[in-house]
Image (cartoon, rainbow over all chains, first blue to last red; front, side):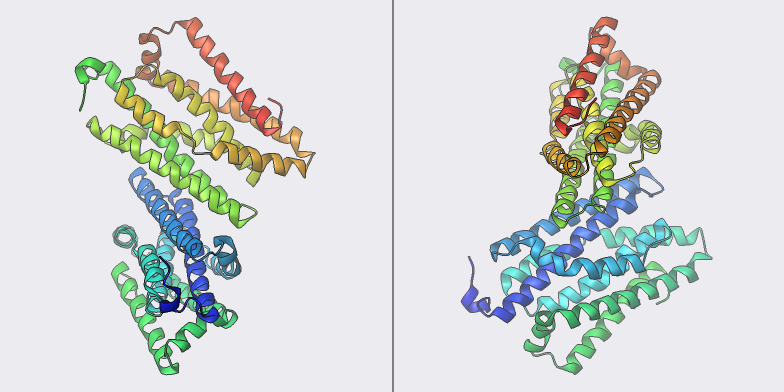
Length: 225
Length: 225
């Protein structure tokens, strides 16, 4: 089923970029699964707790799809994920939620930025890889659920709006800063953008799209970006 | 597909017992899923972390099977689980693992006692309910995995054996104590045992079997019961 010749997987630079992309996305899903399940423990009701655990289980299944795709490329998933353990840890250490609502906003805003970025990258990869990525990028309704729960929580605590807006801005800043340090360290990944024909202007436009979509998410939450 | 008449689901006492049994098992699976995912965050390697998250996802699917069975009986899962939230919280508050290995032992030993008890109860219920329970009682290899990881951890830290053996004994004590308080509060559940023909001798023998199997699990871990 591999179409190496046609899709450039015999080009070592392209192959390294795809492995990096699948690795960072897989580790992102695994981490998102664990965070969501951990945060669900603080949920104020059984209904919300069960739903959050369900989203965690979905994220695990998406992780498995990415591991399978890595396997099809002959790559061990742990090896592919390892380079991204430290940047994810750094991001999470710098953005520890102080409450359950902060945790949910982090899941929505953080996953949102990351997934927008992966969607941008998906246009540079072969069909099979893109199919695995698309599967992992479906949020299975988690976003709508978080928006409705956070809006409810804000409604009963109006003073929270300013604090949570600041929290969203901090998440964006930390995500972009960790993303940039990954790009600097992983030549293959940034090579994929450049090799795909993206010049500095195009990359600048991509960042504008990422921050625009972040602002839209914050607005959906009832917060200011 | 219901066989109410044949299986006694039109008997309110039996029906209440089945709802309790499915409710406690469902909440147990949901809690086990969340604990396993939370504990996975402390895992010493990416391989172990991913495996633990996988067991958490399996537990969520088992939870869903029980929710479906409750739905088939026309019962809302949250309503069925609610009575067991407090006893589970009490158990978890009294048995907070101080390390990742203690968490794994708790998952193995705690789940083991609970599942042995549910297996005993499964012989008193109708076929459809038993099928849903059997599905939820399959540990999907989690036990073997935990045994191998804990044995490895003990091998490199011989002084841990005594401490972890004590931990296992405390888990058994707390599990039996919370189990007993549930039995006292939920008449229907204990009625199922008595109504199923279990006299005090039979119940005593059941407890002997539960503690025997606990000892076997501790021995598998390389610990003394």
